[in-house]
Image: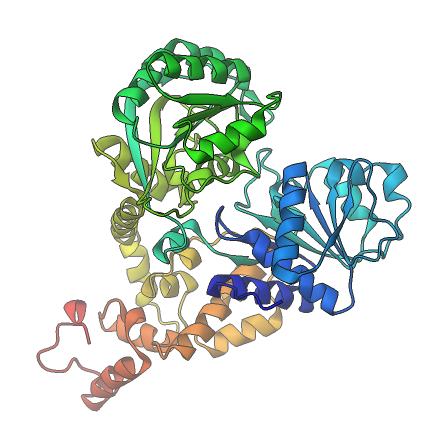
Length: 527
């Protein structure tokens, strides 16, 4: 079917196939909530079918299966078989199966499928895929290409997805999606209510939900009053740690005149409540972390996270309920509370946009000190500018030493700082292949382009350097050798110069027998 993908969706689809065709058979696709990950993997599945293959799409909840099947039918026109409960896809003529991992992992079901039955497997919400149930299914089809799709590559138990996946094919960040106009702007508001969770224990990699519920109980009325007094005009979703805490909070909101409703896994009328909330019958919806996946209500413009978490993926999924665009909606407001804890891994609004701990702390400081609500992209830009200034100052002596070396080649750190490439300067390998030593071919390429390859520790960093060098050459920017030459004369930010601008200055220096041209102050010169 002729379905027009957004530019980043088309790039993501192409990137997945590039990874597979280059032999990286287990690859990740990272798209923020609301950016159409189902659309992308539907087109990837269609591509596989058109090549004569069969596709298995796995999810861990029934709602996600139904959504995937509906979206695939809308976008590709292909109907799906189901592997769940009383239905089986074995022997079906339909080329795409959507399957419940809980059903598929059972030996009786799984054993009937030949090992080569599926040529591709797509794992929705891939941050779950390291669990035993998913691994049992994936191990059964060892030759299948695997695409893991997620809004975040983090995981609660800290097992790195990079230990199982070979690569990340594509990532489209929330920051970029907001800037491109595909998600709504996000503002964060600190509520200076001191909630002490310093004594709360940790269970399965996150704060213990029962202990959080107990710690939160004394503050529920005060929080409800805050929402009723200042945010009654918002369409709000509140995430709480326990069902009874959620029910209690809902009752308090009702006492204060709010049109509030509560849903949980045992609610017999859950579908009706969600429909009524979407239609505007209720202005606040309370839940105990039930609605983090598989539920969309684009009109939500306020999220209250009363379940403090260390798990970035959980935090992002919760906030993602409010990031979609909607007519008349200008922003999503996150109400953040002053959780008192000695731990430094508590997720806050900065967790949505920054994986850099220093940048995140600077963003959180702005939110805490801002008084009113803060646009988190503006806060990120301010934090990055300040952090870069501090880092440049701290690295000044080290870089000065590098610039004055007799060596003809450019140190990778010097190059990264010269072209303002934070990702290169702070690179840490994620996937197993990245951790291996650089190949001889990579080292030869880097040295040919003017990079001192002896300081390149691993294959991943070599790969990133090579990609950056090729991209900069295509964009007509200064080469490492030009940067090295001009920085030795005291010029700064040469990495932002064009190849032509750098070449002209080097020619002027050479014409004056390598002395500074009259009237030029190298440290402040900009072409």
